[in-house]
Image 1: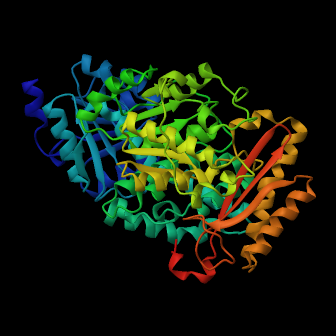
Image 2: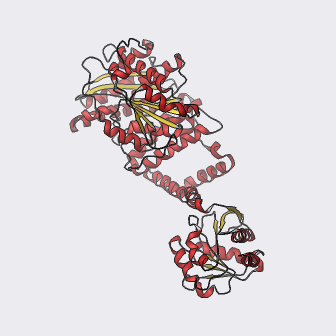
Image 3: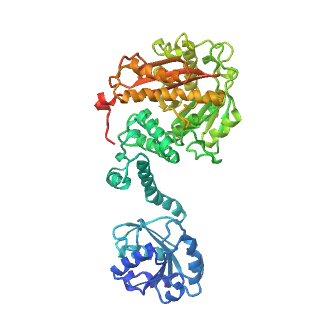
Length: 590
C-alpha cells in the first residue's frame, strides 16, 4: 500500500490516462471536463472497459448503480491502480472485486443534474470518498483539477447524502411538473413558462436566505387559503393531495423554526400531512422524536406523570392531542401536526360524560379502542393515555370550570341547543387534561370552532402555560367535514349531509361576489340547506375571534357556523369568511 501511495500522490496531470467507462450524460460531461483541464482521458463503453483500461492510472465507472459491481469485476483480472465510480448512493463496497485484487477504490459524485453530455462541472460541489487516504487524496485532486469543489461524505452515509440530492433535484422537477399540470387543469396554458420566473427567484432566495425565503399562506398562517387549496386539489388533482399535505406539514415546521418566528398557532394550522379522506396504509409506526421504543399506553394519572417526568426534565417540548376516540383523518392530522412541532406526542382518549346532555348519544358514541391504538401508533404517538371515568371524576368530584356565557351560551351552547353545560363539561375536562399532561402545546380541530375559541379563552384567562393550536377542518373528498358521528349516516343521510358544506360554499361565493350583509349571507346558506331538505338548528355569522354578532363583512374574519340534524347524527360545520377586498392589510403577495 505504501508503493501505491508513492505512485498516486502526484497531481492527476502527471499520470497515465484516466479511463471513463460509460458514454452517458455523466461520463461524456466528465470526459469533456477532463480534456479541457489537460488531463489525458479515454472514454469507452462497458463492453470494452477491460481492454481499454490497460495501463491506465485510474478507471472511473460512469455506469448505472446496478452495473457497477459487474463492470468492476470485469477489471479484476488486470486491475488498474485505482477504480472509482460516480454513484451518489453507492458505497465503495460495489468495487470490492477490484480492491481484493489490489486496486484502491474511490468515488466522486458531482452534485449536479446532467441534462445532456456537455454539462459543465466547473465550480460545482463534488462528494468524494476513498478506501484509504491515498485513494481519497486522488479523488480530491481529480475533482479540483476540473474545477469542482470536493467535500467528503462518510461511506456509511452515502444513501442519506444521495436522498438529500434527490429531494433537491429530482423531486423539485416532479413538484414543478405537478404545479404546471395543476395550472393546466385550472385552464391556464404554458404552465412551465409561467412558473419558471417564480421557481428561479425562489431558488435564488433560498440560496441566500434559507428558511427565511418562505412566503405564502402557511408561513403567514392563512387557514382559509390553505383550506381552499385543499378543496381545489380534491376537485382537480386529488392525486396531489398527499404531496400537498406532507409538504404543508414540513413547511409549517420550518416556518415555526425560522428566525422571524410568527404566530406559531397559525403556522401549525397547516401541519396536516395526509390528504383529507385518505388514511395511511403503511403498517410501520412513524418515526418518533420522543422517547423511542414504540408507543406506551397508560391508564392512570400516576402512570402518566411517571411516563412524562424524565422527558420534562430533559426540556422536551410536549404536545397533547385531546380526543374522544373513534379516530378519523381529522384526529390523525392533529397527531401529525403535534409530531411535526413537538419532541413528545401525548394523545388522550376519553369519552367525557360531562359534556353530553340528557338524551344525547353518550351510550352509543362510537368507540373502537383497539383500532384507535393501532392508528395512533402508526402516526408516531409516544404516549396514549386512556383514563377511565372514575380516574377522571372520582367519588366526591365537585369542581367545574366555566367560561363567560358570551362565548359558551351561544351557538351550540344556547339554551335551545346543547346548553352552556356542554361547554362547562368541555372546559372542565380540558383543564384537567392540561393539568395532568402539562403540555407545551395542545392541538384541536376547527370543525368545532366555538370549542376552539372557548378553550383558547380558558387557557389565556387561567394562565395555563400551553399554546392552543387549532387546525383547519379536514374533509372527505366530497366536502363532508370529518366527524366520529358520521358513522351514524346511511347512504341517503350522507347525501343529505353534504348540504352543510354546499351551504357554506354558497355563502362564501356570495361574499366573494361582493355581498356584505351578514343576514343575506346567512340566508344564502339556509336556502341551500332547505333546498336539500335539511332544516338547520342554527346558521349564524359571528366574529371569528370573539364570537360576537356581526351585521356585515367589514374586513374582520367572520365565522359562519351551521348545525343540523341529519338522520341519527347531529352535525356541525363552519367556514371563516374574510373580506380581503375591504382589508388590504390582510393581503400578502405570494
